[in-house]
Length: 531
Image (cartoon, rainbow, N blue to C red; front, side, top):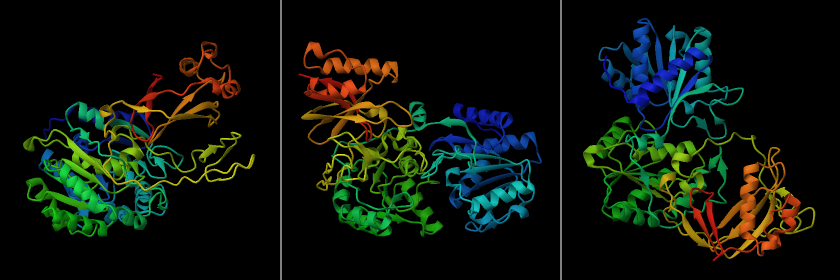
């Protein structure tokens, strides 16, 4: 057994063994796409068997493709490893193998049949829900009942779930800590992944008004919204992808897939469709064709987000808006792998789905907060400053009627936001007017002064802290900004508290321009210019 691990892979293994020795519970190895989770798992299995030749190990995941890949990685590392597969999709049921690779769909009723288990490795552990009545919950509960000392390690590049938050948080958490983390930016800087770029072409498609199901956009409504724009989007990304070798395209529905393929055919570009119903044989043919270059484009719905290794892919087309940051990372991850044989130096993201505007640069995406963990959204009445729920249209204090936010549906264009935070460049935007509001502090934090600068196409917010209980550094920076904005020298002294700040807002002048860093949905104001 000989394998030269990358430095971070060896460190991940060492830290995880240390975590298990020092802690009860189950850790997660947070390793992004391209980090080589299958290699890390294979090396850990080999080490465990070296320490205890009688060790019984399970590697479980939701995908038969991942079962095949992870099994193959172990055999590449350890040719005569006592490994087997238990998966109905793969027509293999070697349930008594000392090292068993299995899909949860095939194994979840077999906890008593498989017997002794010492270590469980779960690939893509973010697929495990906290809900009781699931295959995962059934299996893990019963296998722990049979094996009192069993330990479990999760592996994922996105260790959180939509609507549930981090996998390691909460009283019902199945995992209890992160033993090691390697990020996308770490691997890009180390030369193990290529950077992803975007091209400035306009704004994203509007998704407001679409219903949500299970926390994400309703597929029926989303499919109609996307279908109306497919022809325009295809014409755009065909032009942008002329010098790109292999394309992944993500859409919400099978109907969208067919429409994309029809439109690409008009440009003399063949495109394959991959869905959850695509047979394993057909899927393998398509992916092998993409690797060899005989197939240029594949459009997918509900699949090709995990367990797919096509390093040659160098363009991704986002036509599938989503509120799931985990799904977004998985989709973009398809084009980040190195491909020295094709001369790939970067990957192009054509973001027609508003991914970057919704979630920000892919390397700065944070897990969502679980439902109910934050305050309901609110707004301030511009007349009396009463804080009311966001859906209220008539102020209960003064009777002010909030105007309806009716906007012309924007034309679909790929996003011009930076895909990586390091690629964002400051831009100057003119300011036409500004507005002041008292922004209510959350979770016991002091109120702040919210200044909204209005430009032609977008508003930009700056929050100033004057409450005596505010952070001293924040108060100092806010005082400097106030002094710079003052009309006259006599107005430069910063307010002593928030009441004084609200009373003195007429003393502040409207700036000429702002320098902003367009990162995600909350651009950062870097400078305020008055001439």
